[in-house]
Every structure is written in structure tokens, then in C-alpha cells.
Image (cartoon, rainbow, N blue to C red; front, top):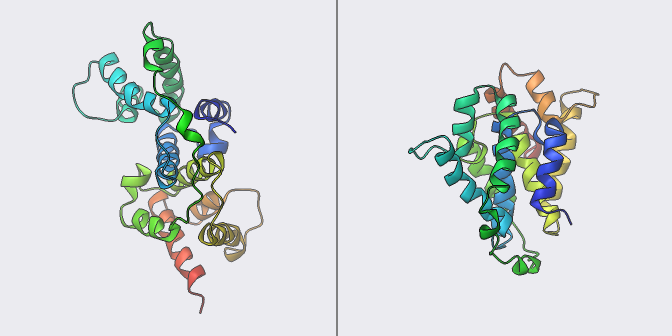
Amino acid sequence: MSNLSDILQKIKKSPSFYLGRYSIVSFQSFLCGYGVAEREAGLPKTSENNKFGEFQEWIQKRFCIESTQSWTSIILFYYEDERIALDKFFELWSEFLNREKHSEIDNASDSSSSDIRHIKLDLYELLKQIKKRPPMYLYRYSILSFFAFWSGYKIAREQFGIQPTRQHEEFEEFLRWIPERLEVKTGQSWASIILFYSPDERSALDTFFELWSEFLNPE
């Protein structure tokens, strides 16, 4: 079973594959999706997850920032380009892990992570909440951010050994239905297909939820 460190290395090697695009914003959306699945499963945070909280504090000190801006916003502010900012994240993350006092932060026990709960999750309610407040879950009102969120969510569920519910199976069926509905035969992702037919990423996310409603309530 892959741990979070392994997943981060995979993202570093192939950002677009996991995030939908080479972007620190999409990376943040991925982590949010991962975290949602972790909380839904009722699993305690491991030492790896706790490092991100410490990373936030370290980044603020590293850049002499006293505000409550997220580490994503701080890195993006200084490096401006989302692609460059993602590369800088991995450089800073490596610097953070290799700092002199790194050994002192690994005291959290990971033994409870084996207590995996196979619980029925209300995915439809989660989707309603995302539709209602996209930036809260996705960081940005964007179809590509949702793609990254869903990628992180799915990977976390697989990592924790959580069996898919009927809702999850139906939602995956919906994602496979999108190219058929839009009459597109391509190897592009469902998010890229919707974006191709939309004026912008925000409108594409709105279209996504319109298609979801149509799928659930066919005439």
C-alpha cells in the first residue's frame, strides 16, 4: 500500500497525470480530496500528514510571513507561475524534510492507521457541498481543480482500503458516460472534454454539475 510520501513522488514525476495540469493550485485540490477521504474513513492523521501542518509554519518563517495565508498561496505569491510554484514546492518540501531538527518531528505513531473502517459514505452529499461552495473544497472554482480533488479522493480511498459504495460506482459510471453524452471519442479526460466545450474553467465546472443532474434524472 502506497503511503503519502510515495504518492508525492509519483506526482512530482507526472504532475499532469494525477492533477489534470501542472499546477500548485491543482496540487492543493488533490491534497484536499485526499484529506476528505481520510476524514470520512475516520482515520487518525499519521506522522506524514502532520508534517503538512508543520510545513505551513515552516513556510511562513522561511518567507517571513506573519499572515494566515496558506503555504500554497505563499509559494504562488513569490513564484507567480503555477507550474514553477509546484516545482518550488517540491524543492521546499525536500528542504523542510532535511532540516537539522527533522528527526524531532517523527514522534507521532502510525500504528492506528491499520484500523481501516469500511463505512458507507454519502458521496452525493459531498458533491452537493462542493457544488455549493467550490473554493472551500477545490481551492479554485475550476473543473480542473475538481479533477485534481477527485484524483486525491480516489487515491486515498484505495490507499486506505475503503470499498466503493453504490454511489461511488454510479459516479464512476457517470464519468464514463460524459464522453458518450458529448459525442466525443478521445483519450482525453472527462474534465478536459467538458473544458473543451466550455468558455472557461468555471463554466466547465457548472456544466459538469448540470450533466451530473441530467445523468441522475434522465427524461
